Image (cartoon, rainbow, N blue to C red; front, side, top):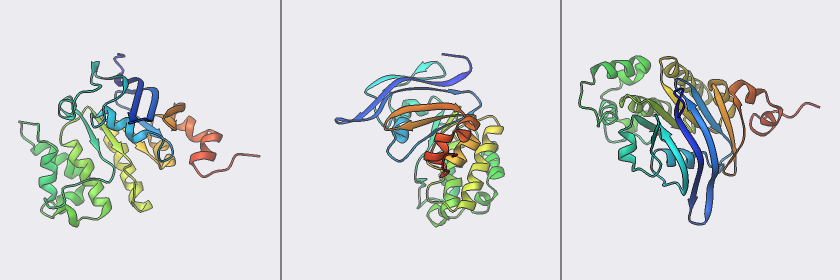
Length: 241
């Protein structure tokens, strides 16, 4: 385990019955960076995240978090290792208030929450304005803010985000990625799964392209954003003549 990597995945395989969703992939997430997995729907990106956080048991392979093997451990054990996920679709608790949702994110903590609540409210002033509002009445963008804020309340070393831009208007998506950059600037390490390759690559230090369960390309975010094959496949830009 490199001192510079918070997460190291090696030869990871994930299968659902006889269907292989992830086929022997390896990648690193250095401390303090944003790393993104991009690819089409069904490429195996979300299955990779689900295996890291324990929701799916890998068929084989190694997942090391801060040097500790976590592959195959339960979600309860893994979340206690200071890793958290912002799930696809946000999945806020609709019948609870914004404040109650945020406190749920800190359910493993025994210390005072005031400083972290203040930090989340500083990042998301709208959540402070709506702290007593039921989460189910928030807009899609506000719910995404809440899902990210809830994850931050656990004081994670690594935040994984699964499709944070899904279903959001373009102007809201820009705001979400601005927040991702700000959270990273304040020291948080982020593993980002995202179909919006353009936004993801411009936010990431390093990226991996996934296709049908395998990693086919890797590089810095800028290198991949400038690559002609990536432009053609994921950025809606045709190759140069």
